[in-house]
Length: 80
Image 1 (spheres, rainbow, N blue to C red):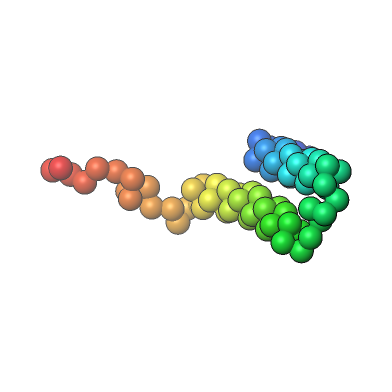
Image 2: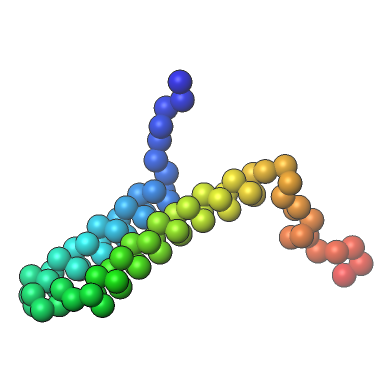
């Protein structure tokens, strides 16, 4: 059985979400009127953006490691 481990991207995403929750909580504690639909949509959008960045980073890492990745795209053409 493979051991489940978490990498740098997971911890960075988790830290970003914790910071977002902290800022949102402090804003609501300082001004309860800040809890409106616009703020909730913004907060939800930021959390979804962090999740998409984590997923996108994993997809990119897998693509780079795949056998279909064309390394010659990153090379200087001959005679240049």
